[in-house]
Image 1 (cartoon, one colour):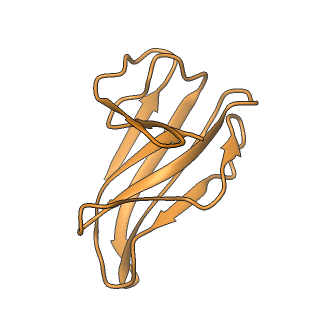
Image 2 (cartoon, rainbow, N blue to C red):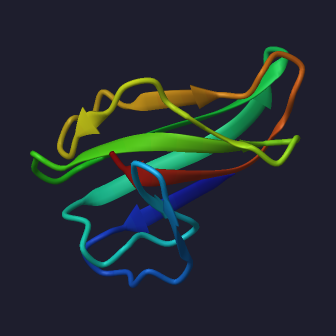
Image 3 (tube, rainbow, N blue to C red):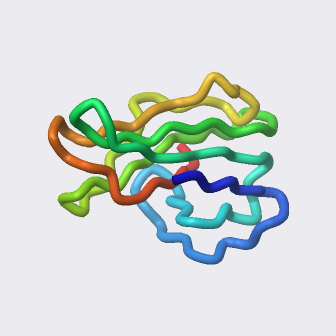
Length: 105
């Protein structure tokens, strides 16, 4: 499943305040400064989400994956907007991913 988010143009259709940042699902929040690309997969015995964001720092982002147990799990570390090397968030072994998102770190 693949979602492309255009942070500069899309309004925050569904956002929830989370500790440490703003969780964006599924649309990007209007105050983000770049385009984000994120997708989630189920394979290799676990689910995971991977993504990256264009733009300019110093704002940072994290990738989030919602696992089959209903819990959101986040990538370790954060990257500055514009760092397209990306991040990955993982579900525990044997657990599928149901959704994905980004949040400001």
